[in-house]
Image (tube, one colour):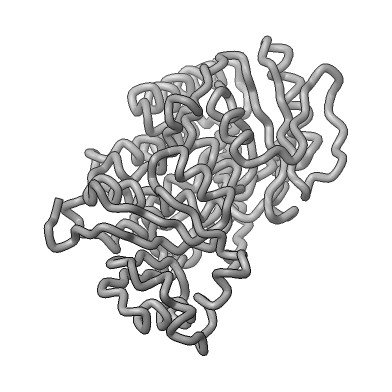
Length: 389
């Protein structure tokens, strides 16, 4: 622990949505580890605070919407109204630079204020952006994965047959069609999985296939417990999807060997089979192949910018890029008709010949590409969509 950073009371302010809060968890994780004995108070949303407390990241919760905390955000608050802030020696603030809380912390005499706007000004992974507010030598590669490790009393055994499906998100435009979710759920059930649908307020009264269970608007802690038991989770770009990853639903980054082998070997086998049977071939790729490309708009000819091979998170994008190289090589060598669909933002449906591709929303991406190669002359089509801002 760095003695210069040591303290006894730390205030953390985060007022964002669930997914945004989860991407900031690595900062809390590192802060807790590097400041053992420090009491950490979260000024934020109660549901988020309960999860963070159950995982050992914070000790106390201040509800940011409680009337007794309104003065903390009042630029004209009296000094007496700010006494609650005076006992903190450090504050970690995720807010815009014009937040009145920053000025009030200074007026209350908090000696150390670490401030960061909620979102990066340029394209970079938001977790890396948040961790940049801490000394680099305190951060490990493992810290870059948001984790919510429940205390033993909160843990539940993982059920290998439980599949959780969450068809909603904060925006209807980001959602995969409900009919696709229903077809997927039916297929999961046919494979012997126990399907549970997870609904929030935005989903209303969606009807589910017979025999499936439904959890409608449960408390966030119950959602986390349910997800922590799941073997499979399927959802849109939403806070619940971030939560599923954080509570332990397996990630591709956790097993890079399996990720690489699963992406490359079956693709190679299917390409050989397609040549033998003279079939057309569709490859579902991903915007991860662009890596850290900083351009505002990506095209088929855009460069791929990956991080170092010491970071397992790049195994997925690199192996999918190899899939693309393989598919194009089979077209060039054997004349195999190939279509490569890059699934990126925003949610759209596209048709190329007899291929119907629905692209789910993925935050941070900004184009949808179809690269078509037919027998004889190449066919090249692209739909480019600017990023939503």
